[in-house]
Image: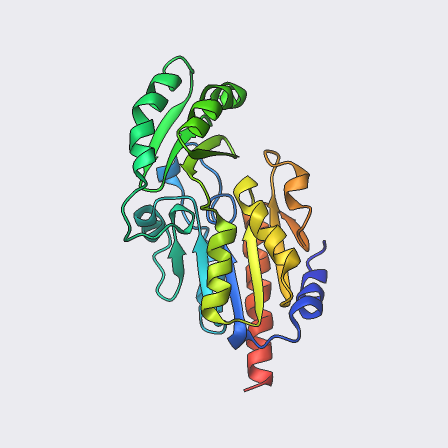
Length: 257
């Protein structure tokens, strides 16, 4: 979609919603940040940071929902006025699911023969990264799928990662809770990966005005974005969309004091 058409789409889908009643939520990695080989080296794109700064002054609520650990997400999105929901929205104050701790030794043993697999232990999930050897994806899934299911855990593939986490926790659940909590009248969500698909499908069923934005890459199949209203190419284009949304919100706010 050409840049000039994005304001038209925003007006068509969200024109009845005053910015003060709009919830804007986004994934982090691959959406507000480029995907990098080492997760610790990721950073919020400057253009995305500028857009978030602009949006927080006009919209009802601004949130980032991520599979990253809560403390890690707070470090990466150090911006007052932005809700940061790490660990797929699992309660930060609650204890980790004991099933994860029980499964960790077994997982470490399962991964020993898998070249290029690296385990990241988070409070709400166990993440197996293989960005340095993408061909390991099928091998990782074969190794962990059945044992994780027997342990009562869910296996969720992503971009060069497989995550093992407690059943029932996903970004769609976190987004639905935000919609209820904020009593918003419209919702925007941006995401780039398998874990964001549920949010797009939730928005498609929502009776409120909404705009689901998929952030495409060579690593994510097109069907992940089947329920989206708009698909853009990469995080820079996602930041440009957020900038357009902030501009539209400012204009609407001035027109309707």
